[in-house]
Amino acid sequence: MEAGFRCERCGAPLEVSPETIVAICPYCGFPNHISGNLKTEGIFIVPSINKNAIAKAFWEHVENDFDLRRIKDDLQIVEVEGHYAPYWSGIVHVYGTVRYMRREQECHTDSKGNTRCHTVERHYTERVNENMHLLGSARRQIKSLGVDDLIKHFSKTKPEGKRLLDLDEDEWSKVKLEILNTEMDERHAKLMMREDAVDIVRNRFLDKSDRIELFDIHTDEPKDVKLLLLPMWTVYYKYRNSIFQAVFAGWDGKRVAATEPMNVFRRAEYMTGAGIGVLLGSFGAAFTGNLIGAAILMAVGGGLGWFFGSRVLEGQRVERGG
Picture 1 (cartoon, rainbow, N blue to C red):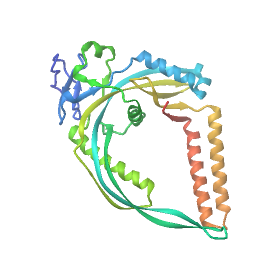
Picture 2: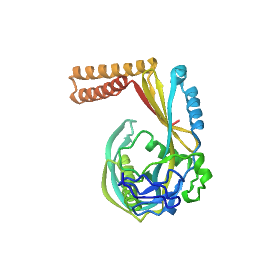
Picture 3: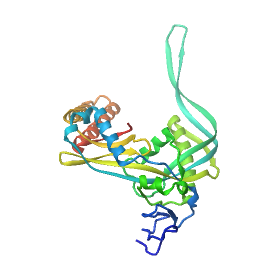
Picture 4: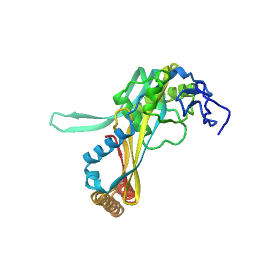
């Protein structure tokens, strides 16, 4: 923890680490620019509902969830914790040309009504010219539960933010949440946006082609770049001897991700899936008439067995979305 930094507005000492770019005063809430290529005027915040509203949203979700409703009386909220997570947003213009090959079935019917099909390679060329609205975390550490889910929910709901400097002390005092450190400044954010935009285009064509033959894609300097502070609330709750968590978007109280206890019905469902996987794998091992078919069955069976078996051992399930 570095010492010597004080709030520009009230003079209070600031808690600053080597990665801190913006430090929010714990006393008056003023955003202090510490380091990095970042203008304080470019920080926007999405207002949040309060802790009581989040707790209410949690219990409403429990009532509407088939599994949780059955164990409602055994659930206990341990803690409701909120913070503002920093995200960089901007618009990236992407343009260029992609040429790719896709294998397709071509069928012909002769005069006798017999249909014959064969695989042909077709080549396509497409132009790319679009503006992408991108949003990404401004923190480098391993992402925790709900970080990416909050981005998806933001993209769907598009809540309005306001400049942090325009937030008066009375507004801030109503929901005075911790603001997580911003570890990437604007320069790094722009580089990441350009790379992400190219990756999005590449993955799009990888999904619909069998081979990319030419990938000539370029990006312009990102526009309308700003640091956006999104409210994220986490409800930690107890069931028997285990702690689980549910993550909520602070602007509308929507649950975006959660870990939930596995009841006996869900555990039986996973065990059945694991059993089917084992049977498929065993059948594949004994299926020697066709080596390719045997290999496929063994791979599918092994995958199913691992997928469902691991969830039985976890004792919990991860839910995303509402």
